[in-house]
Image (tube, rainbow, N blue to C red; front, top):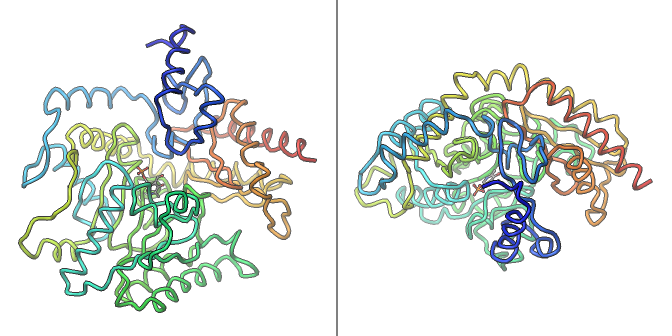
Length: 456
Ligand code: PLP
């Protein structure tokens, strides 16, 4: 379908405005302005309505190997011709799902060896919530039901995962607040919450705050701590290095499961296959999605340790959980090929030793800008934290929409970034080049200058 025909474009926009309820969108905005229709994407660029944009967000932080790869199209066609669908209930498998489970187990840290497939990160997290409950019930400790998550977290949009999130409106708009089974601890967000502490001191402090929550609730009542190694959606919060080993130690000491939500960080984003390696800890369970297929198909994985698998599988009785498309052959085939590409093109090493450090150095140069409080980077995920006062780390009021303005100024210059409160988030595809990073940083400086001028 070509959108160069204005009449077709307008017809599609009208259909969209009339019938499409968009996720995480203000419906009033769709009523006021026609949606931007994206037609094509290749490498690190998307094209729509004859505008070509460098996508420094890799979609929603997922298109790690870049858009529109021929090898992926070939694999998809072959998988559909060979086995377009079959389920994986009742001990049935398919070659793609079986190979993918094995591949994930081989790559995953430690003894994270057993994989359950779903379609989205939300479903994978919710699966782990249920598996954590099941594990404790089968261990004869059914009172262990409380989940501890953190402020500034994002774990999904289903009924159960929404309640784990740090963003209040996501919970309150649906009347999902309350309930003693989810407890929020502070985030290791030094810039906002660290006060006078040095970052590494604050890392230990933030971990100990989790311990306080466990003790207050009673460790016998706490099932798990669930947390993103780097909090992506809510502002690319890179924790101090002291944080994760201490959280893992605390969970072990109090017999609480640790769930690493690696939906964003998995498959190389932080310069190792998994962020647990980057931050020096080992979880009991982990969630994978986005980078698992680089967004070529909806697929996610909930991975559990041998010990948890042994308990869950140790008694006969059906696992009363699953999705029609769990282990879907097409999605699994695409995920396998995606992982192969990340390996053969050595993207993980490249993120750790070449393009990641280049990205960090280039973006950090923006810290001299009067609007920028801090630039945080881990591998190829970054947050540019805006500040009203660099000394006191005071924020602009959110109603001032400063961050949206910066992002808009970047967009009109050909660059997609993502505003998150007062943070501009960047999460580019691994195929990004040095020259494209130079362009990105140049655009960001112009966008910041333009915004600064507008408010002074
Ligand atoms: N967990 C994290 C850390 C995420 O960033 C996201 C989505 O952005 C999710 C879970 C939910 O994934 P999905 O949108 O595929 O349900």
